[in-house]
Amino acid sequence: LLETIDNLEREHLLWLGAGKTNAETVSPVYIEVNDIKIAFLGFTAVSPGKLAESSPHIAFSRGENVTKAITAARQRADVIIVSFHWGTEYADRPNAEQSRLADAAVKAGADVILGHHPHVLQGFQFVTKPDGKRRAIIAYSLGNFLFDSPVRLNRRVGESVILKVRLDKNGVVAAEAVPIVVQNYRPVVADEKNSKLILTRLNRLSGDYNTSVFIGHILSAKTDAANDYKYTY
Image (cartoon, one colour):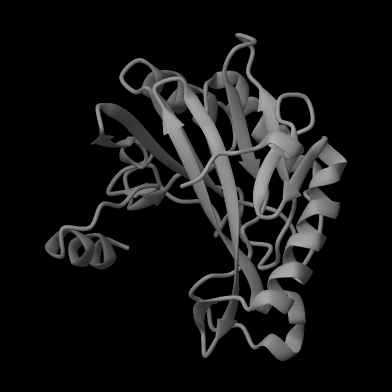
C-alpha cells in the first residue's frame, strides 16, 4: 500500500481512501474547477480483515466514518463526490448495505455517489437532498472499466458505462451514461447495437428508483421531463 502511494505521488496522481494511519484514510482530496470546489472521498465495505490503528490503512465504511468525513468536507467544498467499494458481485441490484450507506451519505451531504465491486451495472437513482433544493445522483455500480475479468464468466462484466455529470456550486445539474464494452481488458465506446442493449437494461434497473435513462440521459421522474430535455455536453 505504501509503495502504491509513493508511486502515485511520484507521478503527481491524486489518491484517496487510504493512508499511513487510520486517520489519514478519510482525508478528502480537494480540486477546484471553474470556481467550483469539489471534495472526493473513498470508502470500502469489503474488508480485508482487522488492521492495527498505527499501520497503513484503508477507509472502511463502517460506523460513523462516512457521515463524519462527509460532514467535515461539506464545510470546505461546494460539491462532495464519494466512491464506495461495496455490493454483491454479479448482482443486478444493490443490497441492503448499499442502500443504507447511500442514504447516510446523501443525508450527510454527498452529491455524487460512485459504486463499484459488483463488476456489473446496477441502476441509477436521483435523490432530493434534505434541504429540498439540491439533488444527488447515486450510481450503485458502474460495472467494469479497466479490468481483466474474462467476459466468458458473464457477458454483463464486459458491458458498462462512463458516467458524465454536470455540476455547479449547487450540486448536480445533469448526468449522462455513455455505454462502453470491455475489449482486451480496456474500455471501448459501444456500437449502436450494444449501446441500446446496455441503456435498455439500465433504464429497467433505474426504474426501481423512479429514475430513467433516456437516450443516455439520466432523468428523475420527479424533476425531469424526457420530452423537453435539451441539455448537451
